[in-house]
Structures are given as C-alpha cells and as structure tokens.
Image (cartoon, rainbow over all chains, first blue to last red; front, side, top):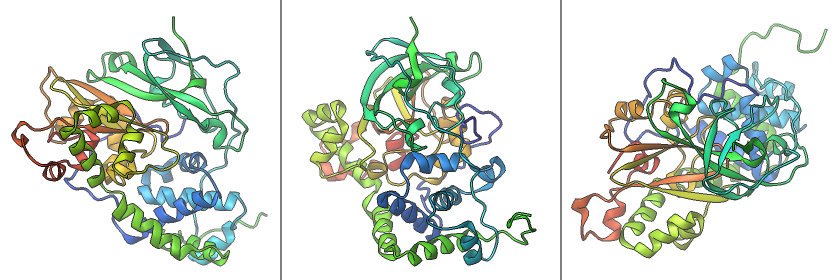
Length: 205
Length: 198
C-alpha cells in the first residue's frame, strides 16, 4: 500500500532529534509493549510481516502523531482483535476509553509468476507496481534501475506472509542505486542500497 | 445502528491501553508476566551494543576473523556466542575505509540488527531520520556531528528485507597495541549504525 509509513526521501521533515546515548525506551510501558508483541510472535498469534503491516495500516493521522511504541501497541491490539483472541469491546472496557486500531487489510498476493536469478553486477529494474497490501518496496525505488551487489538466503515473501497467502520463500537482492538516479538533481551524492525481493525485480538490459 | 455508532467520550491513554491488552491476554491463560520479565531482560540487558562492539574489536585484532565476518556475518558472530533472531537470516558487515563510509537505516519501520546493536535509539525510529537519511545523507550526518571529507563516498543501507547490517568502523590509529577488551570499550552504538566515526 502507498502508506504514510513509507518515508524514504519524503521532504519537509526537520532536523533529526539526535542525542548522544539516546535511549531505546523512555518508559517501562514501552518495554512491556515490546515484550508483549514479541511474545505474541513467539506464540504464533501473528508473524513479523503481519506485525509490520498492521503498523502500516494505522490511519495516517494516528501514525504520524503516535510514538514508536504506541504504533507497536496498536499493531499488537489490532492483530489480537483480527485473530479473534480478544474483542475491541473488551479492550475498550478494560482501558476505560476508546482504543484506536488500524484500518482493515487489503488482500495479499503470492510470488511473481516468473522469477529470475540475478548475478552480482547485473542491472535490474524495480517493477512499477501498486500493491494494495503489504509490500517491502520503498516507493523511492519503484521503477528505478540499479546494480545487483549480492543475493541473500530465501525469506518468506512479505506480500504473502503478511496476509496468510501461500507462497514460496525467495531471496532478496542487495541492489545499489545512485541517489542522483532516485532523485535527479535533488539529493546528496551517495550510493543507496536496498534489499529487494526477487518478485519485485526485472532485468534492465 | 451498529454497536459502535456512539460518541466516545475519551481515548484511553497509551498506558491504559497497554494494561488492557496485557490483562486480556493474561485472562486467556497466557503466561504474560513471565514473558514480560524474560523478554524485557533480553531487550534491555542481553541485546546491547556491547555485543557489536566485541565483534568489531575481534575483527580489528584478528584478520582471519575479519575475513570470516565479512564473508558470512551470522556464522562469524556465532563464533563469539552471539545469536540473532530467527528471521534475521543474513548479516552483512559493512567495512568503512578512508574513502567509504557506510550508514544504516530503515525507512519503512525500525529494522536493525537488534541482537548486536541493541534496540534502536529513538532518533533511528523517528520520522526525520527515516525520511531524510537516504536522500540527504551527507547533510544529515553533518547535522549529527559527522562532517565527512568530500572525497569520502557515502553508502546508505536501507533495511527493507530481513537481511541485517552492522558497520565495521575504522580502527583509530592511536589504538595500536591496545588489548581487545579495551578496543571494544571505544566502539559505540552510533558507530555501529554509522552516524559517528570513532
């Protein structure tokens, strides 16, 4: 989905709020949320792709205003409701107020019908696809051409794994892009690498 | 009229919501308190940047280990007793040189090599870093206090799959002859992410 979560290259953001030795957690409830969602993954209530996608499905206004661990909490609660572990009514009764959850999921998809093995040095293009469900192509590389640097072991295909759709595991390719190809005349010079699933790629030459 | 067709007076606070889901799960007979204690300990005490620091220090003093680390990160860190979560199937170690500087990010969420770097710092997960570092890498690094010479090429690594990355910083020249443990003491989390040099 083309969600607000997909932030790479978006403009209008201010300075990074950087501090030395910045903490990962700011309050004990944040550690609890982190443990609770990890526990749910361990129990098999949901997997990491479902977890990520339920964060992505948060309403944009909620996403932008929520803290990191509020997003984590919202995903955990949304999936527990969707999987029938709890009801929203029970959560709101226990919480004593509204419990905002994520929006509904669109259908997922399985691997691309034809997939190709690529070799380091080969030029590849990221397919220009609009996918309604979970997808791990950041918008800034969509339709862009880069060079394969290496291949990873096979992983579950996120577009399927986040939606309970059958699919084969597939490798990802570390693809190197030039920032000037991604944002012509509008980026600091750099090489930008992304891990791109095989189904998302096609030969560029 | 649906049962949710009413005016909700207030949104529960985040803490009230955490308590609610925790209590609901506990009510299902799940061992929630034990899991919170155990996983909280893992997240705050077991997965720390000191793990990554020891990996870097070993790579600095042991050239054969360095080669193995660059060839297969996951197997090499396992030699030092460090495991990675099951879904992190691949660890790529990014070597800084006098002319190449690597920096890692996750533009879509917050992915990183948590068992070696620790749970990521707040700014890594913030909107600003995620939006800007891929497009304005040199500017962002400068704002964070790292003003790289123009001859240094910047490589940004966006963690868009389940491959994980850590940066192998350059060893500062003044540390010649230092023992491994002392070397590990100067490797910072921000150095493993690549927003600081040592």
